[in-house]
Amino acid sequence: MDAVDGNAIGGMLIEVFGAEMTAASSTCGTCGASRPVAELVVFRQAPGTVVRCRTCGSVLMVLVRRMDVISVDLSGLADLSPQ
Amino acid sequence: MARTAVRGRLIWQAAPVASITRETTSVVTIELDPPHWPGHRAGQHLDVRLTAEDGYTAEREYSIASAPSEPVTITVERLEDGEVSPYLTGELRPGDLLELRGPVGGYFVWEPGDGGPLMLLAGGSGIVPLRSILRHRLRTGSGVPTRLLYSSRRWEDVIYRDELGQDHDGVQVGYTLTRNQPAGWTGHTGRIDSALLAEVAWPAEANPLAYICGPTSFVETAAAALVELGYPPERVKTERFGGTGGTDGRSGR
Image 1 (cartoon, rainbow over the protein chains, first blue to last red):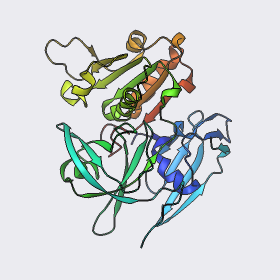
Image 2 (cartoon, rainbow over the protein chains, first blue to last red):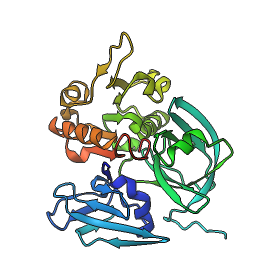
Image 3 (cartoon, rainbow over the protein chains, first blue to last red):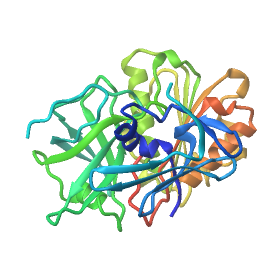
């Protein structure tokens, strides 16, 4: 299955952060590359959503939904700054 | 239970279907009348959720096809093995309720103040958010010079054919047909690549602003080619909706 990009998870990110996040700036904790969340690589196969750096491929975010709760792992990010 | 809309929060809502228009054999445009709609920006999408009797749900994103000043519409392509698009394109009727939330997105959006010239590249149903941008440009009286290159398999698959064929001041529309071409076809053929973009895209010196939407492989190829031509990466906005088959991906996002 082809990857999509960060645009696709804009709705889920609003659920998590309470704000529009696709235009937010992200910085990879591994290679330091910065780009808008919309430009990150997104895989949406079960059981969760995996967001990777477009430069080095490191995992930046993992989001897993269970009923009405979304667990979020942001440990791959050095920075995430809403516009 | 009554729900109160909280500012900045997305809520799921049941939107009546106002009308359905067939665009091609596999594509329909659905006009919706969501009860709570804060207004959208050109290029945004909305999320659709279908719930089965046993509680199973499937969510998909669909690009908004209309300008911000127009009623909310989405355009959906039927994917044969999809979970959502066969229902939307084959079963849904005017008056039905469709559960949605939106609008969503703050990156792949265009406002007249963003300038241009605009270079729009569409692969298949990736034309949908670009049509919203084109309509917004027209409705706001923006004179920004615009070029659209639309890649499609066959002429019959081209969505909004009549609308795009109308002569709009300052808008040049080109097509490339990748699978087969009607007799006497004088447009481009084959997939978008560096050579084709070098021929049809605004030169980088014009400081163009590019929007590319379509299947992931299409977007990657087109974006890389524009950057190769000298477009700054931050002036190349992209939206990828996955494979062209095998998944239900979004239609036009």
